[in-house]
Image (cartoon, rainbow, N blue to C red; front, side, top):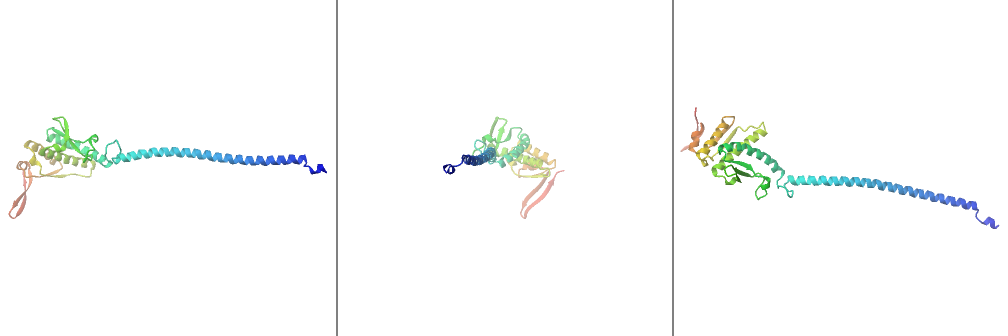
Length: 245
């Protein structure tokens, strides 16, 4: 019969319902997958932002460290070209100069004092950050230490040696600089300068330091109360002590 060959309307409805349920299931699955992908993307976005922020912070720290290293190595553009080792040495060098000037002003009657050349004046060939200048109280000018006369250079060198001994002893209490030997140089001094230099040395020797002076200057030898005299003879050199009461 023709009615039997046609699909039952109820069956069509059931088929449509099953189709839409399948589609619903499929779309629900696709929605869940989409939401899962979206969640992962959002998590990845948050993680990426955190990473980028950390990266920016690391870049800033890297720049700071790089500039600090270049500064310590004396290679930072626009800054004084002085490495970290020289920077530390300059601090001790300044202490030496300060200690040296206390005696140098006495030996020169306040004529001049030594100065560590400023960083702004460095950068010339041969300068390493430990260069000395001389400030004259008479002319109120600063000049290179190389302009000192022979006698002035000797007094400056003597003052620096004494200043270095002071700094070493103060920095390391267990280190005692109890002896110092000075070889010549007094012959380049006039009588007044020599007298003041000897007075400073005698004050030091009157304390706990032994000061030895090697000299051929007759006037200087006459001022020394304790002398180890070396005389050359036909059979060789002879030595003997001359000690004044």
